[in-house]
Length: 391
Image (tube, rainbow, N blue to C red):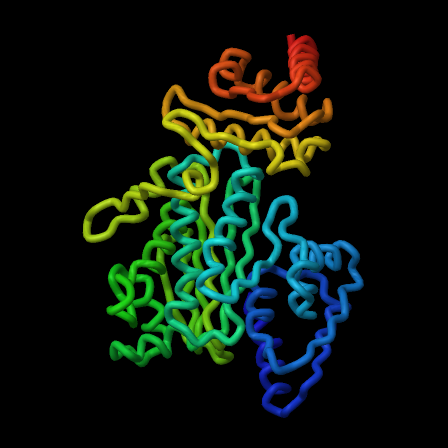
């Protein structure tokens, strides 16, 4: 993680020398972590043209493409960049405060379809922290490159890791407004409740709440900003901040969140002694719903209905929305405008849910609407076939 700072130092030296074309040669690179890559990409000057040499290692070169690091280094048009890849979101470039919710929604959508059993409180905690950290970039201003955001999902560990980087004035510089002139102390103060450099705009709980969400879920938390670094050591549950010889011109926040604690939201987001409550969230905003059911329109996820991988994503979404519904409620799957689905999709979604949860749960919690006779026949056949194999 620290090695990327030496690369930044070299880049800044070339920029100061007036170079307008810089080659970033990764041909001999053997390993690249999201935190280091976002730290690098967020610092690239908009006034310089960068050339890119891909890693010779084919697996690593593929990661550079899938995570969109290569695209962002070359500044290719956004429409040419894949929006997400399995197991993670590709690197997202947020250029204005109006785009913050779009970026956060993209990440949450990926999480809902990638990991089964994500409780609503955990998802709300993720949504809150992402909004706070990315929005901070624009609230405190000065970032010449906006914000860069990437999420990596570790399905087996049930952990989500986030990195947000910017090229703004940085926390130490901002905290000078309230009389804090020591860089490590500025980072330490920034994760305390109610501490902010802009009292007129916010309550100063964004980094405090985010660090608490990471720590309470047994995740990790790290910040680089200016000439300082803050690190949470979960082995001894302590936070330390230190001076850095090579500065980060902006702020890099790197944190992870475990997904298994149903009480994460109420235990982590405690302000002035009271647990923070969220009354309207990503799920309410994104999915049509009545008092008891959330509706998924298959036509909105047309890419999922022809493959097993798509079926797995769809099944995870169904399970998570069913869990988010009030007791006794569930999910409506609408096949409006859909004429046929693949057998593999029906098996992955409906047959595996029947196998895992039971036919009674499937009938009670998952309602199929506007499916023609062909689709109904495929679903029924795949459920019967899988249950015969397991009995």
